[in-house]
Length: 490
Image (tube, rainbow, N blue to C red; front, side):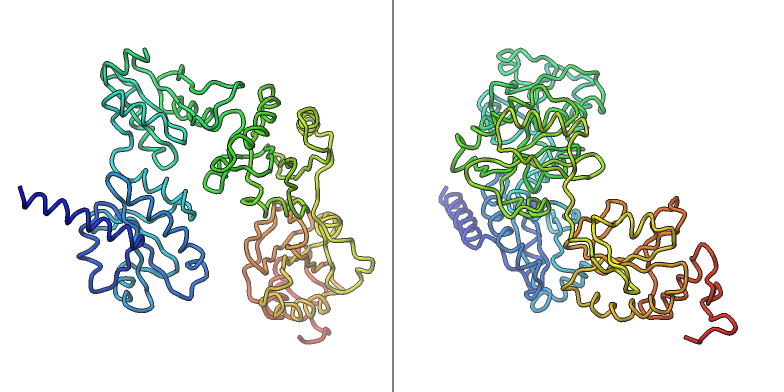
């Protein structure tokens, strides 16, 4: 008895110690022995100088405190790959920072590909622990489960059915995004009278008079039908869009941005959401969501706005072809209704982020901005090489004089070299620009999709590439890039 009491006290002391540390520091000397003791652990392999690691660290620590309180607890730990954890990092093939891996009982289970904010880490890791669907064995367990501050999906199964099998399959598929539970408890099934069915419950803080607090599945017993049921009902008429779920809100999309805060100001938050819901109940074919203005300031900036005022929301939209629209009138139910109507009918002009069109564009390298992009790049009647750059980019600065030389060398050819500041102008969606500089080749026929330039960055590299790709052979260079007879050597 004393031994058992001592073990309980020791276990409590050990958990308290871990909680105090939040994120456990591991090294080569104790990694294997420590991780083997954890049922589930998320390990961050990092370098102290890494900017992304520094950004992740506070989110990681916040998530660690929350996950250690789970049953069973999930441990978050970190390994310094530049000092005491070099061998461990090499052992697990760490080549970039931060690298996150999920371990179970000392063995790598999978790479972590979830969100990088604390709430997202917690939700993702909770989905990795235990079965994909929680057994709701009693009314108390059931009530606690459906009282969560998030959407939950519950299967009521009086008997073993095909639906139960499909339910477990969909739970396995969506466990990282959705909380699933199931019950075979007679008292629960009799009380709620859902026999062999599935119900989606929305969190209480999103409760409103425009839609039910729960939705009962009434489709065919198939994986696709269950998937569709959950996906179409998960966010309701007006979702709460956050960093960890933003991928679920696809265009055509209308977002309402204001001081969304369900912790400090739930009443004020729902005051505006209810007005959006009033409009949303009669809208079809559109995704609507509320957004915390501070979390999505970068999006607000993309629409040319510096900030969202404190008194009323602003409304921003994206069409299926990724064009941007701003509701210019002050927020009201009537104005939102009119804006959505005009947006869906194509009766408003999109917002284009653009610098002013250059008054003089006679230099060898032409300057494109969003407002003249089609004229300078797409419909100019010649083959074109376009560079998307950022003014602060060192590689772009190094490329600039070479790019200018190429343009001068080919100024008598039916080829245009163009540059555009991608930080000050909207880049058309047909170009995938994720870093700088990014260059694309566009044949003059206009039928071929833009081709990403992956060649070298010196004068000869560019000339050789253009000579080989030109729709019509260049006047001064053959297809290999060599000057034709009588032409000046490079």
